[in-house]
Image (cartoon, rainbow, N blue to C red):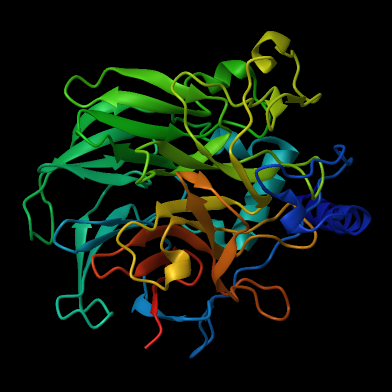
Length: 437
């Protein structure tokens, strides 16, 4: 069948599917420690509800929470997704997108998904670089911008241990020598360990954080499918967080069954590792809530066999009920299909008191839900090292009146001034949220 005709048929079918299946619950129903989990609603054609990416009109910006204000820290970037603050206050931003992964777009479903992601703003070539932003005069705008590292392979996570800068590429963990204050690294990186990649690399983003003593590195590796449809042999070492010995490069699976973990951060009161996870698609607008959770050594969180503990996903064949029996439920749901990626704790924040204890979460936004969910930055209050209460909106207004995406928030981090920085990979900006003057 000619591709133009096929595309038209798929668009019509997708529209019908979107009209025939929509949410019966509020996003808030799928939020908190005990989210509502309705029966799965698997349709012949998945709900496709894209917010087309258009960028920010001149003079328009997101809406900040009461008591805060937002302004651009840096503009004119190329698909900025992840942020890291160096000890001297310099901000590193990974300008990146998906690597070539030809086997991921094979078949009608793969081809359709490639077009869907392109319409949502994820179809541009990867810049493959890390850029340094410096605000030396502390006026809230980066006046210095340099190419810090280039010729990478879809870089994402970054962390510094001593004078070693670690970068998680889409297929390997690299180490670079770093000297405080330098604005570019010209030396070649050293491979620490290979990460799952290759021509089928469905969830390609890899993040990295270091243990407090710097001896271990924790690397997040997303699944190679939605629910194992590419075969479980394609999932070896994936849907997991790795623990890597920094000195030797030896690694083990620290926790598994995490479909697509992205953000990772240490909760400041307990020192526990937390992660933000994207759950599975295509069983209805209300399933499955994305979540944040503490990460327990050796724990299994269900994917692909079950979700939210031991709710079996009947699409997975063969099943593994023995493993399902070991699956633990995550700590806190953050809404179905919100694509919650960014995660950072409020330690060091100088935002108003309501944002002093808890986690900021960048929600990239849905494609498999009607109506849309996500497309904002939220704050989950914590008490005693655990989530307490309902989320608070920090930054909203990323969709215009026609439900088109002017921006999509991804990475979040607290800078040296105590402000919140937010990477916006559709708006090509880094936003700075600060206390209102």
